[in-house]
Image (cartoon, rainbow, N blue to C red; front, side, top):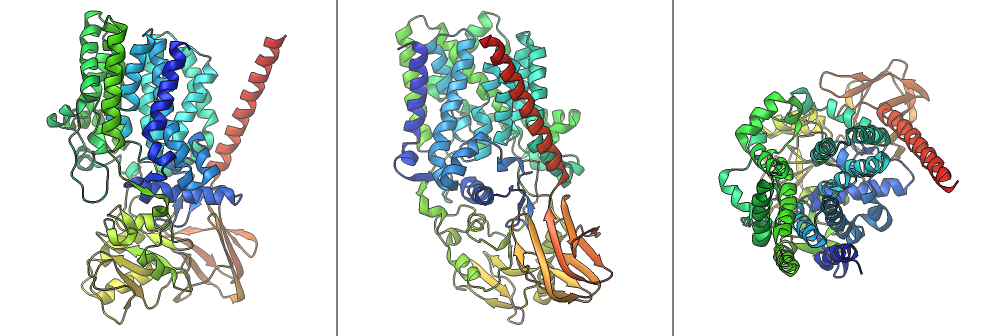
Length: 630
């Protein structure tokens, strides 16, 4: 067996062993984003796709929001295939070991391509795939997917441009902004290798291939308040910068005491290489400087420096797009990648092959033990359990919108386990209900909803009203049928019925006069009237009236997103946008039916471009194959 095959086999063995509790023991990571964002989102995407529809719209969260356009939905990603085949939970058994293997494999391929020995390359690959930077991103399906391909384009610099384009497309469709950093690294390495023309061709081809994702995501980003206010507010962004004390994390992480069932280490500030890995990287720095190889030491220094508040703040002022990045510490990607390469450089400086093998083994054992037990796990039924609060809401004959009060996002009673942002996890179980988490107001173009709509601003105001009467009126305007609160809400029985046990949280309050059905509130003439749709799915909703609906204003209280089309009695009808950012349909002559369809033009154009690009690529490859045979 060749050394290369042995190294690849070892990479696969480490990946499977690291996730043995998930693959063989049925224990799944459940911390934070897995439970409250990615598993619910993935379940929604899988359900819609299996029904034969395109997962364009998510009606269950945040008063309704685009689904495919949110980059982290990963609708077109190859890493979503295990979830499409085996479900949103079962797919984790393949997804997790796959992305770790790919992270190690492409790092190994890149380092071998740089001329390092198999043993030295394996040392660097181990530091990358088992190091703290990558391991602490595993709770984010999108981040981990994109990060696993970080070295792929760079490893393929010498290959044909269309192969590099496929690698870029795979990384981009993984669904996280770290892609831009790895793409920048790829372009820099391509310039150094004299392959800039090939890299530009690959970049153009990738953009055409991914147009079906790029255009809807760009539309969502351009409509976000964060974009319109020119980026994330500086105080919010800089609060996530690293400090001098965090630099010890290159060797070993500082444990983060947690009582909420979360991971052991803070994912934003974790990038450890272990004692053995850090020693190899330090040796690699001296070896590189001695040989006048400055590129990777510069990348290490630049990535670390840019993660500090002052340099990052200066950079975002000079380069405006950088302000769209939420976390300065994301720049530690460059530092982590450089440490992996420098670890290989350090291993290559060791003269004896056996000594290199021992150092690699020590690094693997140290990082394996440290990382494998960093995240807590739970059996699969954790994701399917029906919390008490959910059971109460489901007991209603008519589903309605649920508003979530402050402090509810850290509520252990809802999930049945320790606090894991539990209510957002519960929303996956609320099929047919529209949940509305309180106070979530960020987009960054990566998967979170648009910034505060007028409806959410009204909810903000409701909590500061001088009387419960005024608060109740606000919630009725917004179509909330329930309020879930971790703290006592100022209640008068006139407006609310206490539906859950009042002795302990969550306190679940039901409005006596809910104004919403399936999240759509209709207002005709003077009154707010809940209208049950005759058909309701993720991408469309239809109201067919048993009696002719009189002239007036048909109002549905959803956030305004481009792409909704309205048909009145079978004919396309214009939609008015109100000052509050909602949508009205003016019925001058009444109506017998109203159909609303979510069909954004950005997706239609994007899918057309992508299909044409794939077709042209297939024809080119077919022609090349024919020429080779002849």
